[in-house]
Amino acid sequence: MGAVKKQFCEYLAKHNLKVTRQREIILEAFLQSPSHLSAEELYLRLRKEHPNIGYATVYRTMKLLAECGIAAQRHFGDRQTRYEPSTSEDHHYHLICESCGQIVEFEDERIEQLLQQVASAHQFHLNHQRLELYGLCPKCQTR
Amino acid sequence: MGAVKKQFCEYLAKHNLKVTRQREIILEAFLQSPSHLSAEELYLRLRKEHPNIGYATVYRTMKLLAECGIAAQRHFGDRQTRYEPSTSEDHHYHLICESCGQIVEFEDERIEQLLQQVASAHQFHLNHQRLELYGLCPKCQTR
DNA sequence: GTAGTTGCAAATCATTTGCAGTAAT
DNA sequence: ATTACTGCAAATGATTTGCAACTAC
Image 1 (tube, rainbow over the protein chains, first blue to last red):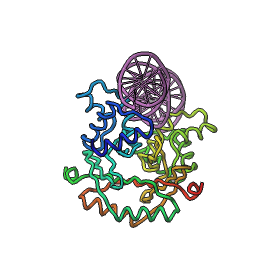
Image 2 (spheres, protein in one colour; image 1 turned 30 degrees about the vertical axis):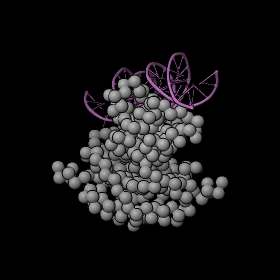
Image 3 (cartoon, each protein chain N blue to C red; image 1 turned 180 degrees about the vertical axis):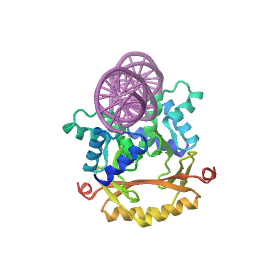
Image 4 (cartoon, protein in one colour; image 1 turned 90 degrees about the horizontal axis):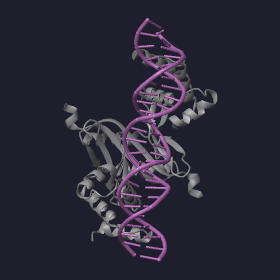
């Protein structure tokens, strides 16, 4: 059993929740899919192989995955909540092309330090941050 | 007539739209209210003095104000779209207390430069950015 | 066996839209 | 006179929830 699945099962056990077939399937699908899918998109993918899994179950399970730290929620321009695998300590940010929707991830030590500094300056205890850059990717600039 | 109202009227004229009593009232209320109100909150404030102004009109007018650059849309943790006066070139970010909801604004030259650098490194043309820090304000830390 | 889960449909919440009447140009 | 605007109620889209049947423990 993969480390992530183990993490999920342990979280479920600790909270008196059950490991069900659907939860296993949805976790699998989430891990194998491209990042930044919405619950709806995941549901649509799932439906091919498992037409009996309900919409609501996907929503509920993604919420669980977010709670136990396996998935991280994201909100980009559109209305939907998107999910990406959350590798604990890895702070990365997003560059989003407003024309083609491409999403590029990046990290930056310096930015992270600066944000921490700013929070401290205001005597805030920093829990998490959201940083997104919107613009045009190289391809869309030339069109 | 204030500069902002003038800006609004000019925008309306240019787009063959009309200066109506409701639009004037909503603009006034927006300018006099605390920052970061949602359309609903603005509607509720308005209703005391002007019970005949409809929900939809507030939504439509806030959208207009955003289009013409008088208001800027913001999305924090909750579901609602919030608006703040948009003083053209002023890039500022937000520190949000997850316990009491307090919102502190801040600016930082260094961050701005870094973001620009990062975008350039990926050959993106940066249009706009979103940066929010979530945590606990000094007061809520001690509770 | 008991308590948590599922799938469905109905509910919710923020926001948008159609429409008949009203007001700005 | 035109054309845009308003208020209302009904529609929308993403997400949540109530509930009776079901399944993991």
